[in-house]
Image 1 (cartoon, rainbow, N blue to C red):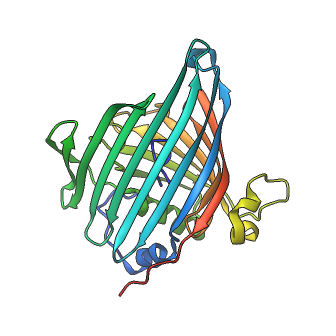
Image 2 (cartoon, rainbow, N blue to C red; image 1 turned 90 degrees about the vertical axis):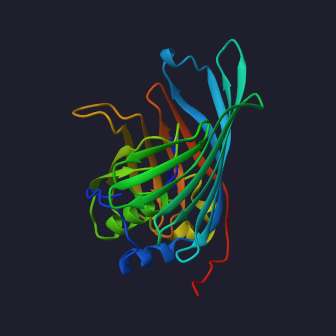
Amino acid sequence: MFHKGFGLATLGSACFAVMTLSGATAAYANALVPHRAVYDLELKDASDRSGIAGMYGRMVYEFNGSACAGYTVSFRFVTQVDTGEEVRLTDQQTTTYEDLKNGNFRFLTRSFTDEKLDKEVRGTAHEDKAGVKVELTAPDKREIELAASRFPTAHMMEVISRAKKGESLFEARIFDGSDSGDKTLITSTFVGKSRKPSADEPDAGKAGKLSGDNYWPVTISYFNDDKSGDALPIYRMSFKLYENGITRDLTMDYGDFVLSGKLADLEVFKSEDCK
């Protein structure tokens, strides 16, 4: 799961070519399990420049669908931010649909502050020979042509595929509809060696049947696509990734502040068979 709301997303490779659903990719798609994960969030670190005295919240991530029917993600990220002078409640709600076979992607994000709507971004994206064509319907209607990119679920599958092959470092261009829905991001992904959870990991038990399974430690850094050279990432996410796409023990580094997310609850749904 990789998404800009918590960094996460939601959820690539050095090759930026348009993706097609190959046999190998389909195998990894079928391995992703539908699930609902709840994470408790708290402030891990904040600089004086951030203006944040305290912060906590909760994130809910629900993943459903199949390789043949497409994947839907419902994501909610709620935080209470204490600036020392006031307390604000922020709430980001995102819904996406990704059709891997046909290269289609739909996205809707609503952002609220103190229960008042700040921003709504809605649109569709489609892979074609030239790259990715985006059609926005909110906050205004317009069309954008972008470079060839991965969508979030395809990106997640690529991370798992490369992790299984033992590849530790790679880059990707992605489009997830985040921010204003009109740009791509460059990602740099590091995958550590497969590990078995230890008894002192606080949220390992919340993973249920997965608690004894091996995971990969993963760190993904996100960069603006219009930058070059040694530009600093917009944000960085670290997490423990299981082969079926479930994640836990999140760290979200926004530069001026860092959030940690511990898996509080996990429900695994029945997988849909392709017909």
